[in-house]
Structure formats: C-alpha cells, structure tokens
Image 1 (tube, one colour):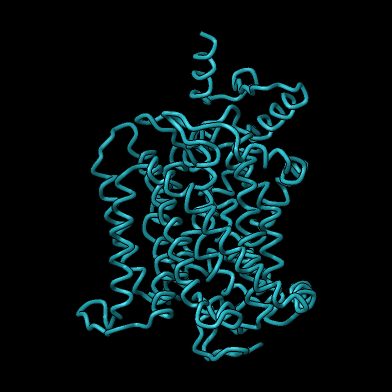
Image 2: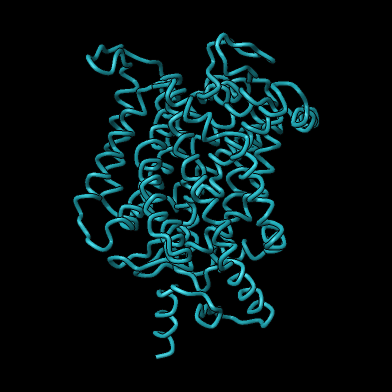
Length: 499
C-alpha cells in the first residue's frame, strides 16, 4: 500500500504542480490587484455581519465550517512534517502559499457563491457546480465531484483521525495490545479513541449541516484561540530565541540544507494541505452562506487562509523551532539526518514534534494538551470533510434524489475514520496527499479556464467595489445586468425582492 501511495504522490505532487499552486496564487493576486491586502479591513467587518436564514448559514458560521476544514492536523502534524522533511525554510514557503493563496481562495469561494443552488431547503455549491455552469462541461464537474467524494469521504478523514489516535497513545500510553486477524496488533488506546470518535461523529453528521454549523461556530474559535495563547506563552518565555528562529526560517528557505527544492516542495505541499487554497474545498462552505453579495463571502474565506497558516501554523512552527524540538531528515531509507535534536524514533508525520515542544516548556502537559487540541482540530475537520463529500453526492444525484447514497457516504466516512485512527501515520498522510493533489489539479485547471472564458469572480469583485464607492448600506447582486449567466438562484432572489 505504501509503495502504491508513494508512486501516486510522485506523479501528483510533481514540481509542475508545485509551480501551478504558487503560480495560481500569484496570478490571482495580480489580477485582483491583491484583494487580500486591499480589502483586509472589509474582511474584518464582514466576519460578524449578516445572519443565517432558513436556507443558509451566516457568514461567520460558513467561515467556521471552512476553518474547521482548514484548521486541522495539518496545523500540528503537518507543520512538523514540513520542518522534518523540508527544514525550517519550509515555513517561509507555507507563508508564501498562504499570502498568495488568499487571492485564489477569494476567487474560488466567490464562484461558489455565484453558482450555488438551493436543494431541499439548503444552499449547496462548489467547484463541480461552477465548472458545469460556466464551462458547460458536465463530465468535468462529475469528475471533480467523484474525486472529491473519494478524497474527503475516504482518504482525508483518516489523516485527521490518525493524528488523534497517535497523540492519545503518546499522551496516555498504548494500554493493552490486542491481536486481530485482519488489522494486526492494535493498542487498546487507539481502539477506544477510534470508537469514541465514530460515535460522536455519527451523532453530528446524522443531524445535518445546521448541526455541523452550530458545533463548529463554538468549537473552532475556542480551540484556535487556546492553541495560539499557548504558543504565545512559549514564545514569550523564549523571546530571546525569536530573532534567531526568524533568521533560520529565512536563511533556510533559500539554502541547500534539506535541499532548496525540498523546502519549497514541503512548504507548498503542507501549506496547500493546511489552508486548502485552490484545493476546492473552501467553495463548498462558502456556498452555504447567506450573504448580500457573492464577493462578501469570497473576502471572508480569504481571511480564513490567514487564520489557518499565518496564525495557527506559525504558532506551531515557532513552538517547534524555538524549543529545538525537531529533526530534519531525508524521506529515503536508510534515513539521513541533516539536523537531529530528537531520537530517530520520533516520526515527523506525527504530532510528536509539537508535543515535545510544549513538553519542554510545560513538563507533563505538552502531550496531553496537544492530544486534546488535536481532538478538536481534527474532529471539526472531519465534519467539514463530510459536508464537502455530501455536497458532491448531492451534485451527482440532484436530478434523481436517493437518500441511500448519503447514508452509504456516512457509513463509509465513519469506517474510514475508524481505520485511519489505527493505521500508520506515513500511509495515512500519503493517502491524504493523493486526495489533496487530485482535487487541486482539477480545481486549479478549472479556475484558469473559467478565467479565460468569463471572469465572473472578477466581474463580481468590480461590482462590489463600485457599490462600496457609492456608499450603499445594502448590497445587491444582479448577475443578468453584469452579464453573468446561469446564476439562477441570484436572479430569482433579486426578482423576489422586487415583487
């Protein structure tokens, strides 16, 4: 299995895809005139404006659903892997991906809003919807939907639950070892963790998107803030080391240690995995929001990229680097270490670096804190993955609804979560990278073609900025007036207001 996964990743995550991810962010930053900088103040204003409706969630709830997908194990174990295989300089490239990716996120999430549909009383949308409507390529939309269901319904949830299982085992010990006929030897800690996650997950996902939104709007801000506070405390207690850490990140970003290419490759790979800009997951949550204008949710989702990478990932990186709780090694076997501060047994693909970093400053608390942080971080990400997978099942079956498909998805995802909790970290992360890469390739290519054909996100941005200049108190969006076709929900919404 590992050999197959590694082979797929060598193709999917080629230098070409790394260049495309960075190139897409730079392209949309330039074409939107760096919307992620110009409208930063507006992002803050929009975070807490608006309200939910019968059909959609509020902007803030949509943000927390999106953040629950972005803020996950990638912020803890993913950052550790970026450092462990790409060196400290990989963090610089994660910052670059976040800054540029915020523009990509604006574009894809604005498109998600423009072309959303109402299905059984709820808003639904995403890349499959806007690819079909703008390009008229139903087969491409179907291909993206299938890839997304596989990625978010089967491959990616296991990465999140795997980190929870590893962290709980490291924090509380493996307990009794149990022999099984088809899964090998398993620790009681992982079995109990997997069982607990699946039970709670089932309760929430069988309650629908409103229950997911209600859960994430409470948990996501709390967990992110708590984690950042701990990180700030560690940095403050080692403040004399901060200039050295910043210099190390910048120097290593362009140095041969762990190879210049490895720093870029791992920084982009884990950056895209963490903040999901361009991956195509964000537009699903963006489409669920009730807003006055599509560009508003695009701006809110662009801000979520900052929260994920510039805040939470940076917090993890500073904790690891400032305490020296990391190794830098090759991926090949036998392992060669460029830097070795910890025993070889510490797996860079696990949350162990982060746990050791906190443990050095707060002895006895690090492993437990990270274990519980991962429960919240990763669990909410699994919920977001379910919502995304469900939306794509809806896309494929909306002409002929059959609730059986949704039921099968729920069981498949819960099985994936259980299996992911107990399998090895390297295989789990490898499968997750396959999922992210598949979606990223399809979505970014689709975004480029859409830009060449119609530029609807750019038209929406200009319309929003013009209304801002006019000082309107209530924004409106008239796609027919703007020459945007097949945005039927917005056309009907505007007609309903005028009647």
